[in-house]
Image (cartoon, rainbow, N blue to C red; front, side, top):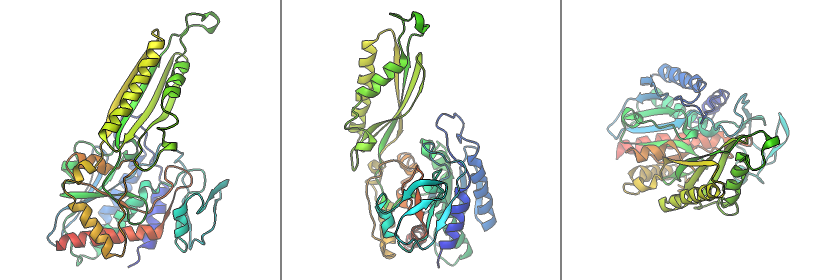
Length: 410
């Protein structure tokens, strides 16, 4: 069965809904607009006949597809929020059918071009149906492609009860992009033996290793005084913030200069004024000792700037976010092996590379629910060149179905 049109329809509808999360918000979910898609999914799951459809008080849609055979209870997750780093308001998805292998231009941004030059994976997708935004926003395939895949697979299973599978639990989470998608109640409420996130990229990706991650906030309080009478008295917090940024390892340990297994220190936001500044950073490494090294670097830089200007007040707060899921999954590779076997049965070559990021599965795995990450096809995420192949999404849907049937036979 071809899932192409069902997936395309779902993706276009879901991406048009603004669901951007906000790291500065204290609510859960962080933005009220995420409920627009969460409630839509709740209604669609109910209409297609899923059981136990619930929207929790912490903003997760949960549902059950009842078992038709013996087998483990498997969870499938995707997140509804889109990244705060780029405009996600007014997304206008469009479909380029039968992509011809050349440049893709954008109706709302004449200077923007997507091509195999800046996205080599696109060059392998001639003849595919490519979904992009219009040039002024991200698309939101991260992770609405995952949402569409799970919804299409769920509908297929509910419409075809003769397909053998164990109990399936579905969860659509908010706030994954800001590291708050998995609350303390989710592992218990998900109630599964193991799970998968559909939040990966290229065809065949089955990932069980992610960054370990911390977040950091540096606050600089200067000494404020009228600039006309400031000599010997003013301490400008902006100048101290600039010193901190300048003293960090800008030539070796930033995202734009690292790849593979390199970690980084990334300043994501800086705001304030001459009397008070705030710098927000993220620290990433695949190993805990590497992460500790980056914490030490940041603290020592702050201490050095503080020592040079004792009249200022500089605080550095570092908060754990998630840990490399490999630490737990390598002890029992059952869900990884199951996904690899299912992929191979479909003629898809499994690819396992470290995720230079994290997923809800990173937190879930740490909290006791083993949760590898599976491909969706999404590419160039968090920016205006984001795109996805409908046919890649269809192969991910095939993987979902092959996986649950294989588990039922185990």
